[in-house]
Length: 338
Image 1 (cartoon, rainbow, N blue to C red):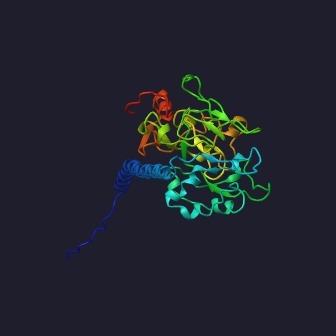
Image 2: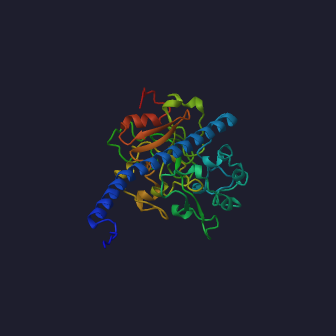
Image 3: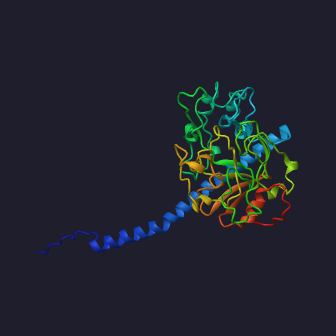
């Protein structure tokens, strides 16, 4: 009488290790592709944000025959030096970003830290004004700029949105020339204009700039863009964690500078990150030029919206002179393809 025994089937240890190794190799191959696909999607969303912001400015121009000024600081009976509480150009275009409900609640007759404004501005959360590739996007404490406190000098300063998108003042000096050795004939054009007695230097008042935005009362229109709207940078992206003044609804530097190359903070991270503070003393306290430049978490470069509304990706290695020419609305330089 014969007996039939069933043998138990399974993997040997060697086979199991081979399968695990194969799975590991596949994951290693697929993960970068997945991450690249995700970044491509985020970059596309960021590009769309810039596009919509540029179109909102165009619609503002159609209504008012000018673009908004960068900052509105000329409030009656305001004490000199309170520029850190100016209203910004972002507030001006809120109705053209389908955010009229927020705009209608803002009291433009007082500083942005007075009256109802803190309860309005500190509550604003607009995803289209944030770059999805920025891991630190979102709300920041207003007091990170040291000068921003409630007008009474007491109480909680609150939080508001960090600025991922800045209007371009062109190759202009914000506080100091960061890299004059690169080309002193192009770099660091100083603002022209006047300031009230006791006011501070910088693009905060009625100063003229080479870009499509100044830092204060001056506003430009399409006719000022002599080099052509497709050849002049309008808006660029930045990372607010690197600059305590990169805030949409607090601070006075509502512009970015192009007198330093894109992503220059990777080359000279002198000031460090500033999530809840200035991130350093001395010149770092007032956003030296390289910290006010354009930067992103997109690999290899930054995205900018041109004045015609088109969006371009600018490589980190762009020729420095070309980068400066792209920021100047009236330098007479032939740009060509870039």
